Amino acid sequence: MSGAGREAASFDALVERLRQFIDDEVIPGEDLGTAHDAQAVERTAAQLRARAQALGFGAPRTAVAEGGLGLSWEQCCVWLEEAGRSFLGPLALQCAPPGQPDLAALEQLLTPAQQARWLAPLRAGRLRSCFAMTEPAPGVGSDPRMLRSTAVRDGEGWRLDGHKWFITGAEAADVAIVVARTEAGPSWFMVDTTTPGFERVRAIRTIEPFALGGHGEIRLEGCRVGPDALVGEEGQGLAYAQLRLEGARLFHCMRFIGLASRAMAMAQDHAATRESQGVPLAEHQMVQAHVADAHIDLYAARLMTREVARDLDAGRSIRHSSSMAKVFVSEAVCRVADSAVQITGALGVSEDLPLSMILRMVRPFRIYDGASEVHRAAIARRAFTRRLRP
Ligand SMILES: Cc1cc2nc3c(=O)[nH]c(=O)nc-3n(C[C@H](O)[C@H](O)[C@H](O)COP(=O)(O)OP(=O)(O)OC[C@H]3O[C@@H](n4cnc5c(N)ncnc54)[C@H](O)[C@@H]3O)c2cc1C
Image (cartoon, rainbow, N blue to C red):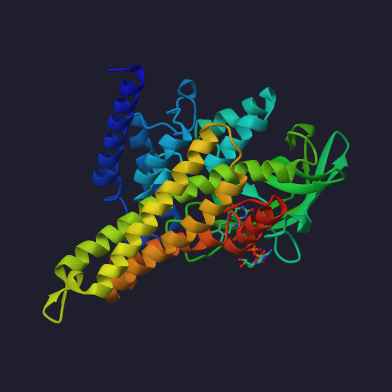
């Protein structure tokens, strides 16, 4: 067998072991009754994380020398889809936001001294991060130019003031990457969450189940940080956010394809046994249409995601392609999850099955990491300004 053949076979074997772990331990660990209890979710996730580490499942994008699996982006498509079949999979396998995309960006941006202070413990799971950009009106949401939080020089360091919300993982975070405006423009700062002036206001309840660390509201008032808190270059904060988001949205696409596939598989099982008008639901053409459309959506979603992943592996720009994939996949997984609920009837909207939770889990993806409308506007703008042919 060639070297590439051996590598592919060992990756296939690794994925098979992951599949068994997800089926035998992670999905059975989902307690739908405590899906809205962050502490209970954290306890289960911690147990599964330890188990995943014992099985040798390191973080997928982290280098092997750093204890990770060193997977390519294309291999991650397979890995994340398997992990993503369970709400708890990405949490157990160190590939859930905000930690994974934060690490991916910080690995490229932090100095050696900053890496020793923040990156090493983040990699080892001793620290948790969150990414704090979005602000209540009139602050930044879809339009990055509306950033209002400020960072002004204060002696050697900086003084940060601002108001952030919907910050995933804020409740559990030890360090926040805060995006604030300096004289040079939007910039990133590493802010330890115990710093005086850093206040967690509340955890915002959303429709998502299994929301580990919640989506937090934060206030920064006279929050003083040292000179080493500045990440990379002053004024480059939006470019860095773009860097972080491109990989992050690809990871969301991968894991939500897994979750939506699981929903439709459950709906198909239901349709095969539940009867209406003397025949299984599966024999009614309108149910068949739901199933067929879901398969088409998921097939296309996988192809788009893998193509973008290949571009990323090859070092090509994914700005345009990842926008198109993000819009398509985020909408496709919603259609699939919605059809799964529809096929399963009243049981589908209950919390006896995970289907309604899957629908609620994938719905916000049409808003975060760029709302569909914002991506469509950007795709069309590029099409006209660069005269792109479809
Ligand atoms: C579950 C969840 C997790 C999140 N996690 C984080 C996080 O960890 N860190 C963080 O910083 N932020 C996070 N966010 C916030 C997210 O980034 C913002 O919700 C997003 O940028 C949109 O901003 P907004 O909600 O203020 O919507 P707005 O900007 O107010 O837009 C509202 C709607 O208006 C429409 N719209 C907006 N602009 C345009 C336009 N130019 N053209 C056409 N239509 C438009 C879209 O339909 C959009 O959904 C999260 C959000 C959610 C829901």
